[in-house]
Image (cartoon, rainbow, N blue to C red):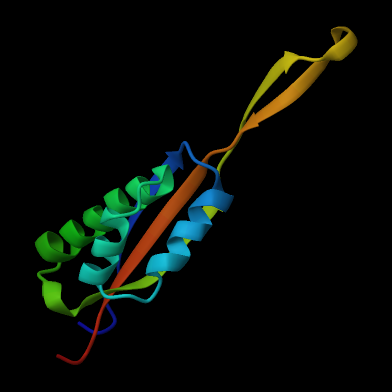
Length: 116
């Protein structure tokens, strides 16, 4: 079971990829329990979303692949941009200024450590 990678994804999360990438750097490469503790105390919106995806990946690993919870770690975690909503707001002299509402796709891949 060393080559099995468990994934979970959050498609079209209403948070910018730039803000999410900061949170992802906190948990990249950590054990599952340590990553969950870090994200539990992160009060930002991306932190809550990443925790949700991490718990989903954990459930996939435990229920679908019968992996041991103690050996799981965050193998890969990344974010990519999703299609933006484009809106307009009133600008000076009767013009319209664009507003870009950014969305992101959050991906989590868990692996199983050989030791322990």
